[in-house]
Length: 17
Image (tube, rainbow, N blue to C red; front, side, top):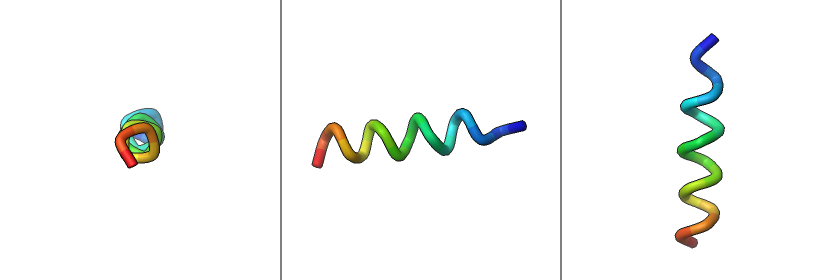
């Protein structure tokens, strides 16, 4: 399952936002 990468990207984007 490659969902971990998607979540990581989303979290990073949220952190930067």
